Length: 363
Image (cartoon, rainbow, N blue to C red; front, side):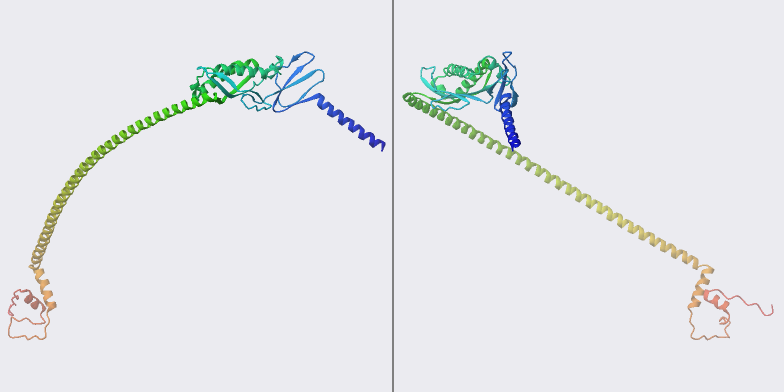
């Protein structure tokens, strides 16, 4: 039990010592902070800005300064709205060029230039640089806003021009404090109550004048547009008529051309058909003539062939083959009648040859 108690007490003491060492030997730099390290022995600031994380700190040797890296604001307004990132002052009362008093609500944003936080600490301005920035911003804005006349304040372009000029000046003037302005915003402008009413009436008059000018410009532009529309309509009609005329002319020329082509085609067709018909008739006539000549020649040659002895024999044979005797009566007393068994005499009879004279028995 005594050993357990000793172990518990020892662990507790070690834990306390670790916590003390972590808080004493290390410093934590948050994401929204910039760390600046100072060597107390050498009495110098390290020329470096440290980012997020843990850094070693030896008590009596090192001192760490933590600067806010977030955007800061300088605000001039009637309502006092305090934040950890801003410095608030009453609204700026500035005399205009025409000697009227105007009250401005405005804001200026800025931040420490990257890599320059150690310079602020080294120049011993860590606690006062914000006040210096505020004073510089107020001085610059008073000088620039005093360039506006009462009526110019109502112009958005004029206010934006003054804000841009003031921002350029602040970028130069705040370099002394190692800060960079980001934006100048004029949020509101007010005049004394009586003068405010007169200015509103004057502004309303100006707005009515601008409205009248705008209406006149619209009417002029409408007239120009109507004239242009009429001119375009007339030009369109003229072009449409010209193109209709061209189309009609082209259509007529095409119709005439088509009719000419069709007529020429018909003439060519008729001529070709007539020539073909004539050629056909001539060819038929020539063919028939050739056939007739061939028939005549055939008949002539046939007749010549049949007019020979052989032809007569051929005809006699044909005649003899076609003869059909139902009965034959021969007169044996007539010597001119051939005997039926005498084929030679019968053949000579059929072919028309004279019978040969029979020799005398005496001979």
